[in-house]
Amino acid sequence: MVTKHFNDSFERISEEKRNRILSIAISEFANRGFTSANTNTIAQKAGISVGSLYKYFETKEDFFLTVVDHGITQLEKTLESVISMDLDFFGKIEKIIRIIQTHSRINQDIIRLYNEMTTESNYELITRLSGELESLSAKCYIEMINLAKKDGTISSEVDSNLSAFLLDNIFMTLQFSYSTVYYKERMKIYLGQDIFDKDEDVVTGVMKVIRRALGG
Image (cartoon, rainbow, N blue to C red; front, side):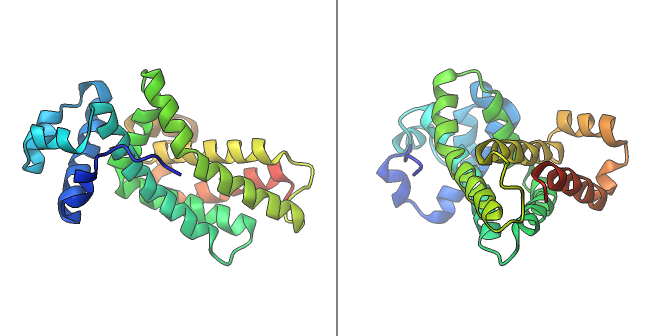
């Protein structure tokens, strides 16, 4: 369960106001990073005082954690919706890849925020984030793999935990590749300048690799 990093006063304001603050903060943290992000700027754009902001959050770290949690929770809800679909293991994996292609382009600030989180140099902060935010996806992928091994969809010899870790890394790299400048350029070097016009080729290619790796 994700720890709450905000005061009760933040929950008492309207949902519209909460979402406005968080949306502006996602953009600020995603584009400037944790260290350079300016809480005064966020407060001004959100139409509140910086004093009010610190009534909602004890520290800048708590504010950042809340913002990341809000952004990643949206991604996790999408994941959960796929897990509950009436599809076999590979059908769910393919669905996740297709959602990544669409979601990452539409929600670039959220993905850039996630990327910023993974490169943050603050050890204590990153430890808190990884423990809270990666647990759900890890649990979902491991359960999916174990069920697929049980019903014979994939090889019973694959290591469930390692396979889940590698799958998550594929998904994370794809998310970054459709939303951040560095990873976009990196993807074009490997796959060609027109790769972002070939979504179907990416899906087909990734699925072939995953099927062969897992014995499907």
